[in-house]
Length: 132
Image (cartoon, rainbow, N blue to C red; front, top):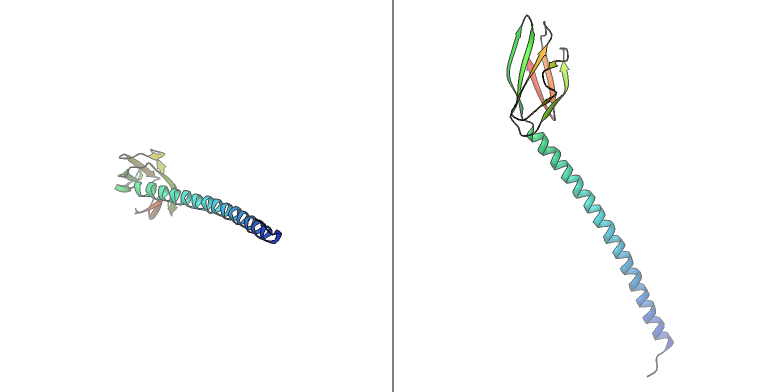
């Protein structure tokens, strides 16, 4: 049996193109896998953040204003701890009996005497508006 050099060259060329194509496809699949993995971790982080925000169910139980000041009682009905991160309005920043509102616990905020108007509190990812 006699093989021609031209035939052997074509087979060798085809095999080398196959090897190059397989190497390119392998590297492309690796990069796409890394990209999918990064996207999945971003989705997981977003879902965890939404679950925490949904678990921070802080509500106003009562308010009271008198000569000693204005008071606001908050209760966390949720399953995640919540922190009061910001206070907006024409009032001074409240004094708090708690730094972090634990689940199923109450927090009392006190405002200086003469506090009137509206205040918006950011509790975790949620906002609470109160009018004194």
